[in-house]
Length: 277
Image (cartoon, rainbow, N blue to C red; front, side, top):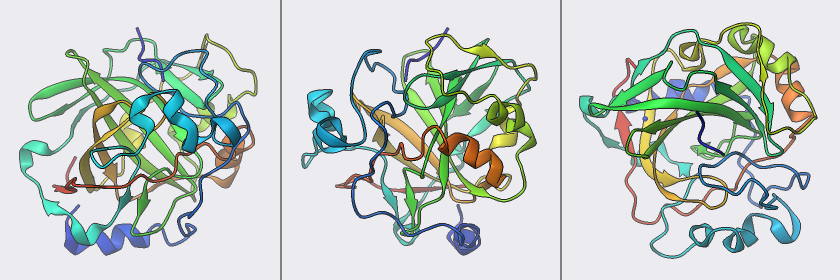
Protein backbone atom coordinates (compact mmCIF):
# COMPACT_ATOMS: atom_id res chain seq x y z
CA UNK A 1 0.00 0.00 0.00
CA UNK A 2 0.93 3.62 -0.24
CA UNK A 3 0.76 5.44 3.08
CA UNK A 4 -1.36 8.46 2.48
CA UNK A 5 -1.75 12.67 2.87
CA UNK A 6 -5.18 -8.77 20.29
CA UNK A 7 -9.03 -11.98 24.00
CA UNK A 8 -9.59 -13.79 27.21
CA UNK A 9 -8.93 -17.50 26.75
CA UNK A 10 -12.07 -18.24 28.70
CA UNK A 11 -14.08 -16.56 25.93
CA UNK A 12 -11.95 -17.55 22.96
CA UNK A 13 -14.27 -20.44 22.14
CA UNK A 14 -17.14 -17.99 21.69
CA UNK A 15 -15.10 -15.92 19.27
CA UNK A 16 -14.00 -18.91 17.25
CA UNK A 17 -17.53 -20.25 17.27
CA UNK A 18 -18.59 -17.15 15.36
CA UNK A 19 -16.34 -18.33 12.56
CA UNK A 20 -18.08 -21.69 12.32
CA UNK A 21 -19.19 -20.94 8.79
CA UNK A 22 -15.63 -20.41 7.59
CA UNK A 23 -13.72 -22.93 5.56
CA UNK A 24 -10.58 -24.74 6.73
CA UNK A 25 -7.36 -22.89 6.04
CA UNK A 26 -5.80 -23.49 2.65
CA UNK A 27 -2.64 -25.56 2.60
CA UNK A 28 -1.34 -24.28 -0.74
CA UNK A 29 -0.44 -20.76 -1.89
CA UNK A 30 -3.37 -18.69 -3.08
CA UNK A 31 -3.73 -17.72 -6.70
CA UNK A 32 -5.48 -14.68 -8.19
CA UNK A 33 -5.61 -12.65 -11.35
CA UNK A 34 -2.27 -11.02 -12.11
CA UNK A 35 -3.50 -7.58 -11.06
CA UNK A 36 -4.28 -8.43 -7.46
CA UNK A 37 -2.59 -7.90 -4.13
CA UNK A 38 -2.91 -5.61 -1.15
CA UNK A 39 -1.46 -2.19 -0.52
CA UNK A 40 1.82 -1.96 1.35
CA UNK A 41 3.73 1.04 2.69
CA UNK A 42 6.80 1.52 0.56
CA UNK A 43 5.76 -0.79 -2.27
CA UNK A 44 6.57 0.43 -5.75
CA UNK A 45 3.53 1.74 -7.59
CA UNK A 46 4.55 -0.17 -10.74
CA UNK A 47 5.53 -3.44 -9.04
CA UNK A 48 4.30 -6.48 -10.93
CA UNK A 49 4.04 -8.91 -8.03
CA UNK A 50 1.02 -11.14 -8.01
CA UNK A 51 -0.51 -14.15 -6.28
CA UNK A 52 0.25 -16.73 -8.96
CA UNK A 53 2.85 -17.81 -11.44
CA UNK A 54 6.35 -16.43 -11.67
CA UNK A 55 5.43 -13.37 -9.60
CA UNK A 56 3.44 -15.24 -6.94
CA UNK A 57 4.19 -15.28 -3.19
CA UNK A 58 6.89 -17.93 -3.49
CA UNK A 59 8.79 -15.54 -5.77
CA UNK A 60 8.24 -12.28 -3.85
CA UNK A 61 11.88 -12.21 -2.80
CA UNK A 62 12.69 -10.45 -6.06
CA UNK A 63 10.38 -7.60 -5.00
CA UNK A 64 11.67 -7.38 -1.42
CA UNK A 65 14.38 -9.34 0.39
CA UNK A 66 12.24 -9.56 3.55
CA UNK A 67 9.70 -11.65 1.61
CA UNK A 68 12.13 -14.58 1.64
CA UNK A 69 11.59 -16.87 4.62
CA UNK A 70 14.67 -17.36 6.80
CA UNK A 71 15.06 -18.54 10.41
CA UNK A 72 14.91 -14.96 11.69
CA UNK A 73 11.87 -13.91 9.63
CA UNK A 74 8.95 -12.24 11.42
CA UNK A 75 6.52 -12.16 8.53
CA UNK A 76 2.74 -11.79 8.29
CA UNK A 77 0.16 -13.21 8.11
CA UNK A 78 0.37 -16.06 10.61
CA UNK A 79 -1.72 -18.97 11.85
CA UNK A 80 -3.06 -17.92 15.26
CA UNK A 81 -3.35 -20.75 17.79
CA UNK A 82 -5.33 -19.38 20.72
CA UNK A 83 -4.04 -22.16 23.03
CA UNK A 84 -0.55 -20.66 22.89
CA UNK A 85 -1.22 -16.99 23.62
CA UNK A 86 0.27 -15.27 26.66
CA UNK A 87 -1.44 -12.69 28.85
CA UNK A 88 -0.85 -9.07 27.91
CA UNK A 89 -1.23 -5.89 29.93
CA UNK A 90 -3.79 -3.12 29.98
CA UNK A 91 -1.22 -0.78 28.45
CA UNK A 92 -1.22 -2.90 25.29
CA UNK A 93 -4.94 -2.39 24.74
CA UNK A 94 -5.96 -0.55 21.58
CA UNK A 95 -7.80 2.67 22.41
CA UNK A 96 -9.70 3.99 19.41
CA UNK A 97 -10.27 7.65 18.68
CA UNK A 98 -12.64 7.17 15.79
CA UNK A 99 -15.45 9.36 14.48
CA UNK A 100 -17.35 9.59 11.18
CA UNK A 101 -15.07 10.93 8.47
CA UNK A 102 -14.96 11.47 4.71
CA UNK A 103 -13.27 8.77 2.63
CA UNK A 104 -12.31 8.22 -0.99
CA UNK A 105 -12.60 4.74 -2.54
CA UNK A 106 -9.98 3.41 -4.92
CA UNK A 107 -9.23 0.26 -6.88
CA UNK A 108 -5.43 0.38 -6.83
CA UNK A 109 -4.92 -2.74 -8.93
CA UNK A 110 -4.28 -4.85 -5.85
CA UNK A 111 -7.38 -4.42 -3.70
CA UNK A 112 -10.17 -1.98 -2.94
CA UNK A 113 -9.19 0.57 -0.33
CA UNK A 114 -10.75 3.54 1.41
CA UNK A 115 -8.50 6.52 2.07
CA UNK A 116 -9.50 9.24 4.57
CA UNK A 117 -9.58 12.70 3.11
CA UNK A 118 -8.02 13.88 6.39
CA UNK A 119 -5.42 11.36 7.65
CA UNK A 120 -5.56 12.97 11.10
CA UNK A 121 -9.32 12.51 11.45
CA UNK A 122 -9.16 9.04 13.03
CA UNK A 123 -6.50 7.44 15.18
CA UNK A 124 -5.76 4.76 17.74
CA UNK A 125 -3.52 4.77 20.81
CA UNK A 126 -1.40 1.90 22.15
CA UNK A 127 1.05 2.23 25.04
CA UNK A 128 0.55 5.98 24.91
CA UNK A 129 1.56 6.17 21.24
CA UNK A 130 -0.79 7.58 18.61
CA UNK A 131 -1.22 6.02 15.18
CA UNK A 132 -3.33 7.78 12.54
CA UNK A 133 -5.57 5.83 10.17
CA UNK A 134 -4.07 5.88 6.66
CA UNK A 135 -6.51 3.59 4.89
CA UNK A 136 -8.42 0.35 5.13
CA UNK A 137 -8.66 -2.41 2.54
CA UNK A 138 -9.83 -5.99 2.01
CA UNK A 139 -8.43 -9.47 1.39
CA UNK A 140 -10.31 -12.55 0.24
CA UNK A 141 -10.07 -14.96 1.83
CA UNK A 142 -8.64 -13.95 5.20
CA UNK A 143 -4.88 -13.77 5.45
CA UNK A 144 -4.66 -14.79 9.12
CA UNK A 145 -6.17 -18.03 10.31
CA UNK A 146 -7.61 -18.64 13.77
CA UNK A 147 -7.26 -22.13 15.19
CA UNK A 148 -6.93 -23.53 11.69
CA UNK A 149 -9.91 -21.73 10.24
CA UNK A 150 -10.05 -19.02 7.60
CA UNK A 151 -12.78 -16.40 7.11
CA UNK A 152 -14.26 -15.39 3.74
CA UNK A 153 -12.51 -12.02 3.95
CA UNK A 154 -10.33 -9.89 6.19
CA UNK A 155 -10.37 -6.12 6.70
CA UNK A 156 -7.11 -4.32 7.45
CA UNK A 157 -7.12 -0.87 9.03
CA UNK A 158 -3.63 0.53 8.50
CA UNK A 159 -2.31 3.14 10.94
CA UNK A 160 0.93 5.08 11.02
CA UNK A 161 2.65 6.95 13.85
CA UNK A 162 4.61 10.16 13.57
CA UNK A 163 7.88 8.20 13.72
CA UNK A 164 6.80 6.09 10.73
CA UNK A 165 5.94 2.91 12.65
CA UNK A 166 2.90 0.99 11.43
CA UNK A 167 0.11 -0.75 13.36
CA UNK A 168 -2.59 -2.74 11.58
CA UNK A 169 -5.92 -3.89 12.96
CA UNK A 170 -7.10 -7.12 11.34
CA UNK A 171 -10.84 -7.89 11.37
CA UNK A 172 -12.36 -11.14 10.08
CA UNK A 173 -15.43 -10.74 7.88
CA UNK A 174 -18.13 -13.36 7.51
CA UNK A 175 -21.46 -13.43 5.68
CA UNK A 176 -24.45 -12.33 7.75
CA UNK A 177 -26.32 -9.06 8.32
CA UNK A 178 -25.19 -6.29 6.02
CA UNK A 179 -22.68 -3.69 7.19
CA UNK A 180 -24.50 -0.36 7.03
CA UNK A 181 -21.19 1.42 7.65
CA UNK A 182 -19.73 -0.10 4.47
CA UNK A 183 -22.86 -0.14 2.31
CA UNK A 184 -21.73 2.67 0.02
CA UNK A 185 -18.16 1.37 0.01
CA UNK A 186 -19.27 -2.00 -1.36
CA UNK A 187 -21.76 -0.51 -3.81
CA UNK A 188 -19.05 1.80 -5.17
CA UNK A 189 -16.52 -0.93 -5.99
CA UNK A 190 -15.32 -0.68 -9.56
CA UNK A 191 -13.16 -2.81 -11.83
CA UNK A 192 -11.41 0.33 -13.07
CA UNK A 193 -7.90 0.69 -11.68
CA UNK A 194 -6.93 4.25 -10.81
CA UNK A 195 -4.30 6.12 -8.81
CA UNK A 196 -6.91 8.65 -7.76
CA UNK A 197 -9.76 7.82 -5.41
CA UNK A 198 -13.41 8.74 -5.83
CA UNK A 199 -15.09 10.56 -2.90
CA UNK A 200 -17.83 8.65 -1.13
CA UNK A 201 -21.04 10.59 -0.51
CA UNK A 202 -21.42 9.48 3.10
CA UNK A 203 -18.96 9.49 5.97
CA UNK A 204 -17.71 6.21 7.46
CA UNK A 205 -17.25 5.67 11.19
CA UNK A 206 -14.33 3.24 11.57
CA UNK A 207 -15.55 2.26 15.04
CA UNK A 208 -18.38 0.38 13.30
CA UNK A 209 -15.75 -1.84 11.67
CA UNK A 210 -14.30 -3.13 14.95
CA UNK A 211 -15.81 -6.06 16.90
CA UNK A 212 -17.64 -4.77 19.96
CA UNK A 213 -15.97 -7.10 22.47
CA UNK A 214 -12.46 -6.09 21.42
CA UNK A 215 -10.81 -9.48 21.96
CA UNK A 216 -7.57 -9.57 20.00
CA UNK A 217 -4.17 -11.14 19.62
CA UNK A 218 -1.17 -8.86 19.26
CA UNK A 219 2.14 -9.78 17.65
CA UNK A 220 5.06 -8.32 15.73
CA UNK A 221 4.95 -8.97 12.01
CA UNK A 222 5.28 -7.38 8.61
CA UNK A 223 3.48 -5.98 5.62
CA UNK A 224 1.66 -8.79 3.82
CA UNK A 225 2.76 -7.69 0.35
CA UNK A 226 6.13 -6.77 -1.16
CA UNK A 227 8.44 -5.43 0.10
CA UNK A 228 7.17 -7.39 3.18
CA UNK A 229 8.83 -4.88 5.52
CA UNK A 230 8.98 -6.10 9.13
CA UNK A 231 8.49 -4.13 12.33
CA UNK A 232 4.71 -3.88 11.86
CA UNK A 233 2.56 -4.29 14.99
CA UNK A 234 -0.60 -6.35 14.46
CA UNK A 235 -3.79 -6.65 16.46
CA UNK A 236 -6.02 -9.38 15.02
CA UNK A 237 -9.53 -9.57 16.43
CA UNK A 238 -10.93 -13.01 17.16
CA UNK A 239 -14.60 -12.15 16.84
CA UNK A 240 -15.68 -11.42 13.25
CA UNK A 241 -17.98 -8.70 12.00
CA UNK A 242 -20.55 -9.41 9.33
CA UNK A 243 -21.20 -8.17 5.85
CA UNK A 244 -23.97 -9.40 3.60
CA UNK A 245 -23.34 -12.09 1.01
CA UNK A 246 -24.06 -9.46 -1.64
CA UNK A 247 -21.51 -7.06 -0.15
CA UNK A 248 -18.89 -9.78 0.01
CA UNK A 249 -19.65 -10.78 -3.58
CA UNK A 250 -19.17 -7.20 -4.76
CA UNK A 251 -15.54 -7.43 -3.65
CA UNK A 252 -14.78 -11.01 -4.65
CA UNK A 253 -16.17 -10.37 -8.12
CA UNK A 254 -13.17 -8.07 -8.60
CA UNK A 255 -10.59 -9.70 -6.30
CA UNK A 256 -11.69 -13.29 -5.63
CA UNK A 257 -8.40 -14.36 -4.04
CA UNK A 258 -5.86 -11.75 -2.94
CA UNK A 259 -4.34 -13.13 0.23
CA UNK A 260 -0.80 -14.15 1.16
CA UNK A 261 -0.41 -17.64 2.66
CA UNK A 262 0.40 -17.83 6.38
CA UNK A 263 4.08 -17.51 7.28
CA UNK A 264 6.18 -19.39 9.89
CA UNK A 265 5.87 -18.04 13.43
CA UNK A 266 9.50 -18.78 14.34
CA UNK A 267 10.35 -17.37 17.80
CA UNK A 268 7.48 -14.89 18.15
CA UNK A 269 5.05 -14.61 21.04
CA UNK A 270 1.30 -14.11 20.62
CA UNK A 271 -0.17 -11.85 23.28
CA UNK A 272 -3.70 -11.80 24.63
CA UNK A 273 -4.98 -8.22 24.74
CA UNK A 274 -7.67 -7.29 27.28
CA UNK A 275 -11.16 -6.78 25.86
CA UNK A 276 -13.05 -3.54 26.05
CA UNK A 277 -11.43 -1.72 23.15
